[in-house]
Amino acid sequence: MIKKNKKIENAINNIYEEIKSCDYDTKFNWDKLAKMTKILSIKKEDLYYILGKVNLLLMQFDQKCLITIHGFGKRIINPKEHDLLAKKTAKKAVKQYKKAGAIISSTNLNELNEEEQKNIIESANKYHTLEMFTSEILKKKKIGTYNKIDSRSAGLIMDTMKFFSDGK
Image 1 (spheres, one colour):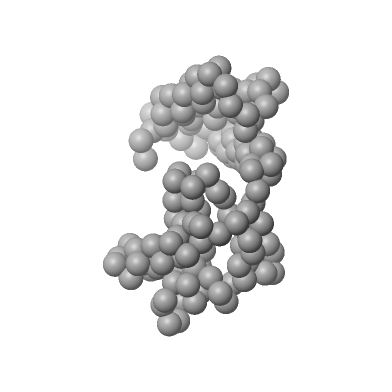
Image 2 (spheres, one colour):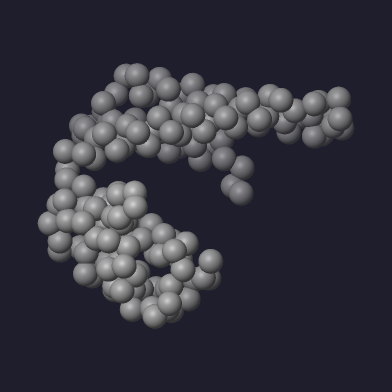
């Protein structure tokens, strides 16, 4: 992976500037995206990293989002698809919390000292609480729609995640 440097920053800006004004449903194949970076020989994983950053810029400043078209490249999704993508992403997060909880709960506490046991139990509680909280939000809310209550819920989710994070 290329470390953050001027070449990568330029590649991110090059692609972003070229893509930001494109219409919804515009498709870009991998070769075209690689050429947009203006880096002669770019690895796929570096291109993925760059496109992840470009996607963040598009979402933040242009209300657009890129998705992968497997075996082809990327596509700017239309606004009607944002709701579905947000729901899929949230469901994946719940699955990840469940998986993390399963890993933690499979820990053999007999092999750990008292401090390590305490840390494992705290982690298990965090993963379980976040998984339950996210599941409830998904059941009650239509992810992707906006009203004042949703923005408060989003703030609560972020505050909860910050509260439970270890800052690592």
